[in-house]
Structures are given as C-alpha cells and as structure tokens.
Image (tube, rainbow, N blue to C red):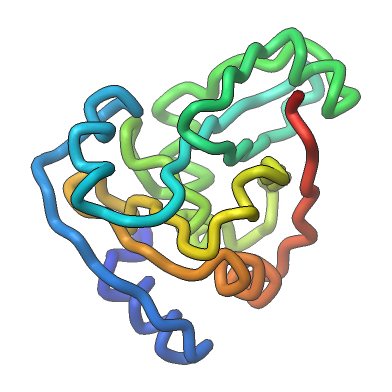
Length: 163
C-alpha cells in the first residue's frame, strides 16, 4: 500500500524536517496549480515521471517555468527515447496518480528503481512546494530539507542545468 500524506509527514517528523501544509482543490497541471502560487510562497515546480528505452525510470524535477523537451532531456541525461511514464507505471513505482507526481513519492520506491534529477535553478529557492502524494494539497519545505529527505530515502540526486 502506498504511503499517505500522513505517512509522509511522520517521516518528516522523524527527520526533523519542518513543513507547511496548504489545501486547495485538486489540480492536474502546472497551469491549474498556478492559480494558487500567490497564496503559497516559495518556488513552484513541475515533475515528470519518465521512462527510457532501457526501461529505466526517471523523475525530473524543475521549476514550474522551465521548458522541458524530451529530446533535449535525452541528450542531457545521456539516455535515449524518453517517454512519459504510463499511469500504471507511475502507480507501480511511485504510488501516485497523474497530477500528483512529486519527489515526496520516492518514499514509495522501496527498491530505488527511479533515478532522480533536480534542476539547479530550483535549489535557488529557500522554500519549495510539492504535492504531498495527493494533488489536492501543497507542502512547503526548505530546499536543503528536500535534499536531506531524498538522501535519507537512499537516493543520489543528480543536480543539472536544463538551459
């Protein structure tokens, strides 16, 4: 059974990671979420769950205003033929539905089968906002705490410039 927001927040408490929880109507795209940006301070993000030709899963996390073209990501990540992960694979590996993709969902990847890539510009924000495993809320944490969370979950994070 995938983790719930409550499970995620319990993990934050274990790691002494402070957070702020904001509820809002469900959103499925960055455009829909942008209605709430003024009410929720900090950096806002987009998250892509991808799969390459070698069946490797990727989670690419970037600022909300970054253009992410799959062809360019193929070259940057030195992989081939990236495609958006199907909803079934998203659920299988991250335990979330489309519209709720978040680096916090890596709490559900117990076998560490997803490679994580963060945009360097994202980390310029002191506070970052992500869905807490559901798309009807946003959770704000410090960027340093995001890195600490990912490390505690067993990930080596690649930080890159997307140009």
